[in-house]
Length: 413
Image (tube, rainbow, N blue to C red):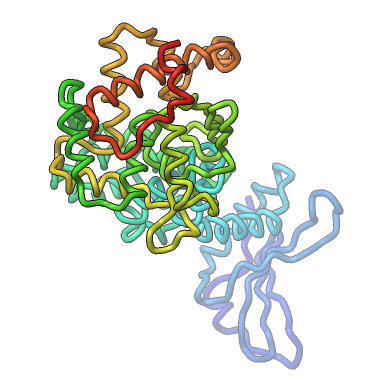
């Protein structure tokens, strides 16, 4: 048992001298009295590795009481019994505390975004982060990651859920979980406290992209032919419809991606949703469309340049806005043109895997996927030509561009 030498009475009675001096309490703990009258607690010990003596400051009296100083000294001795240097232990804790407060939710989310950008398209990455900026960062963005809790996030998302935006809530929860998983994997936090937060909200009713039925295609083509829209927008909608591509992929098409001799459009990996290149066999109508729009944008980088700034491509929402104004609000969106193609081709009995390949849906069978890329191109060309002819038949002459005769032989091959 340690025999303590100090008491509050002795400490209060200690007066400053010309030089500082120590009052020992025993077993390494002492109180240093300085000439200015301040009284500092010190714990003297031998460092586990070097065996050199050093002092660990425990604070000043009376802010740190005699009882607290003795308790801190006991903790230091317990660390020494485990060969842990108390001073290094404190410095590491302080370092971790600084890092923890520097690692706010928004800071770590931005780090995660840089990694995410290598896996998805820039537009998709922007949408992912934008949802966090809108719904999470205003309330929790500046909060240290180790202070983020499930109840706090759930409370933040409740107003959004109350509006009925359960699909948005689900997606935000998914993105937060990705951020937290990144934080765990990079050592910023020990565990992910948000793993089950989506369970706190009701189930959403999944809504598919609005689309039209195959028998409604003539009505759409007539509306497109009579629409009061710019030639580039008109051509963009037809291009997306014939190529079965996503709005962003179509709007961002570059002339350098087109091989007119082989009648192919090779979309690079960085522009694709799954970060894998996608080859689109071009039908005669697509080639004709390129020939007609060449006088507008052939000297530029993008096939469908922006009206305001021709040095960038048309906005990915351009087709959507036009379709809405054509009278299809709530009935069809640009992305729904892909669903229209899929439905039509499936009803016509085309090979399901071939359709999925044309839609650039990921094939989880990597061996088969490699085979598809190498062998399916000509089979896909016949499908794409059939689809273009189906669209032309539905248009009944209501087309902005007609296929050049030199390419017509490909349609019926």
